[in-house]
Length: 461
Image 1 (tube, helix red, strand yellow):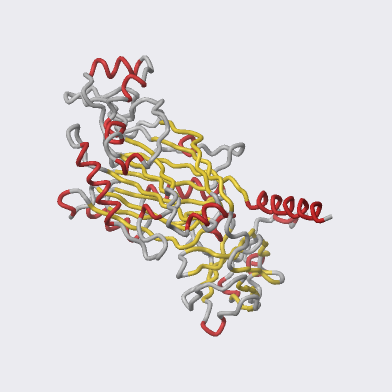
Image 2 (spheres, helix red, strand yellow):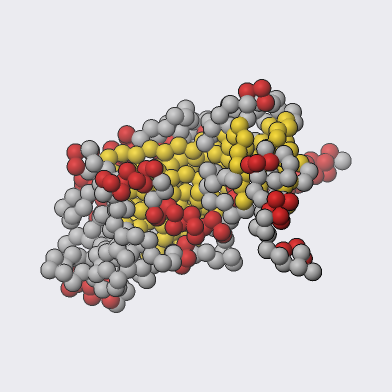
């Protein structure tokens, strides 16, 4: 009898483990855009395929146009590239989590809406290395966050150019890693994270080979003839730090340098040698027998597998071709429920004040700067709200206590539509709770003023 019970317990534990195991797909784009404005369409670059859905989009750009006047304007309003990706991904159910900009370097993170309550502790950092460190034309920008309790970091770099600076590029990378710090005790540095994705215009070249041999090997798609002279591959053989990073095989054409709006390598007088300057690598934190994290690794494992690693030569606005990498994150979630439960109560319309409720599902560092926003379905970022209401000090609840708030009718939209409520935590810098989708009805004022089409909801019958 005892044996049978023990077998049942093992089966139940296996079932619980299976329920916690999930695969999330991360799509990374790195592109030196050479000061160009966005193209007409990036859907193929983002591989927006409903049969192969993505969970996180990570977009790293280099050489975004950053004249002093334009850079100051972009600090006030979203830059054209951010607008472009937000307008493309927003209607497809993705929300901008955060972004970081340092002159021409830009890193933007998007997540499928369902994942937003499980993305916490968002922080960013940047390091200048170009022109004695004073101007951000070279360097690195990073974003780190907790994803279902797993600490991820994404690092977008633009390193020193030219053939003879391979060692300097490695030195710059190490300097970026050493200088970037985060305000969290368990992950104060980039390499403390469970997974680090490192990408960008790393500027490593193909050494020794002449231009004729390079182009002949590329035209015949015998890329393997060039791998041994790829500077990043060569430096990995010498540098223990680089050996901790993995990369897929370079089975695509070198991504630099092209004549613009063509797939022809540089025909200018300089005739730059083709090179795989644009790369995506990743690192899993090595297991440390002395660290308590080893128990965390065993209880909540995380595995990274590469699905796609290629370039898209169809884009010609730059002298670089974009590189894309799609990865599967196989993980066991440390959290299954959002920190906050939010709900719209009753029927909502601009004819009267609306009622909402929220409750904390577990204790976390709430503050009086937290707020609850009203969002239209397809919203593009946490700041893309229609209206919001502050969570006041006297309304910060205990765990499981239901708090009721009112949103003024003057703040509500007049026209009908599908909406969602989101609780934004100032300390965690993220939406930690989302309500189910609900409908706001068209108001009497909208009907009287003729704002609602006559045939809506059968009014023309």
